[in-house]
Every structure is written in structure tokens, then in C-alpha cells.
Length: 210
Image 1 (tube, helix red, strand yellow):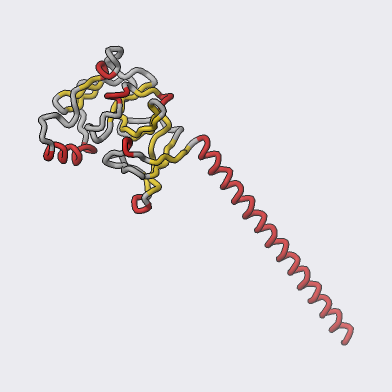
Image 2 (cartoon, one colour):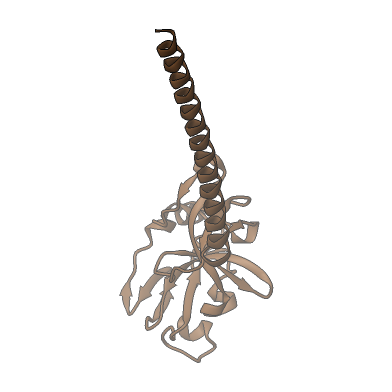
């Protein structure tokens, strides 16, 4: 009886040791797995940061009705700009943010404060508020958006936006640091499309350009 008790005791003890070892191995395995997952996540973020996304801090000249001076935004470098997108682009060593108003193959004219794209009136609800504020407080008779066309901003070279170029405007049309001053913007000048606002935190989220 005593021998059976001793045998059972050693069996239980050995079984407990085995379970303990298995537990230690599983803990180590989980730890190693978590380390690997963290490293993969860091690598993925690093690669995305290099090849797809970058951040940009909005400065005063790049601010508009949706983005304020000091905001930090995420820029998608792989997305092709579309109508109404905000893009970050470089001119004379300085980065600016403007809105895409026309893409390749489109004609653009502004006359009497009305935007025409391909000879059709193009409504701009995204500037309604700032335009109303300007017209109600301005002491001059100047329109919110002065007359121009693709022909004038390209110095007579084009009547339509050529392939590989974009026509961009600021929402605050009194800030003419856009195609009216810089001409048509080349693809090679574009850093990317603004997609997400990081700071301030109370405005954290995707940017809707409506």
C-alpha cells in the first residue's frame, strides 16, 4: 500500500512538473509570438510611412475652410487625385494644400464669380460659407473668385487641362497661392492626397471635402 502511495505521489509530482514545463513553454511561445507580431506591425508602419503615407503640418499659406494653421494631416501618396480632393504639392521649395477643381481633359473658366467646367456651371457648396462671409464684409466690389481660365493660367498654352496636370484652387479664393499664381500643377509636384486629420484630437478622423 505504501509503495503504491509513493508511486502515485511521484506520478502526480512528475505530472505537475510536466504541466509546469508545458506552461512555461507556452508562455515563452506566446511572448515570442507577440514580439514577432509587434515587429511585423512596426515594419508594416515603417513601409507604409515610406511608400504610401506621410504626415504634413498645415501652415498659414496652406490653410483653408477645412484645414487650419497647425493641423496635422495624413497624406496618401499612392492615390490618384480626383475632383474636390485636397492635395499637398510643392512649388519653389514650399508645400501648399489646395483643392482639385479640374483634371486632364477638362476646360475651366471662372466668369462673374461662377465656375464653369467643360462649359457647364459647377456648383461649389464647399465654399458657400466663406464666400458669404467675404461678400457680406468686403468693402470692395471685387468678386470672391476673379475671372480666369485654363488658357490664362497656362499663359495661352492650353484650353484644357493636359494629361499629367491638375488645376487647383484654394477655398479662400482671396488666397491666390494656387493655379492662378502657380499655373497648372504637375503630377511630379504632388506629394499626395490629404485623407485624414490627426491633430487637433477633437477633429481626429477622415477628411470629407464637401
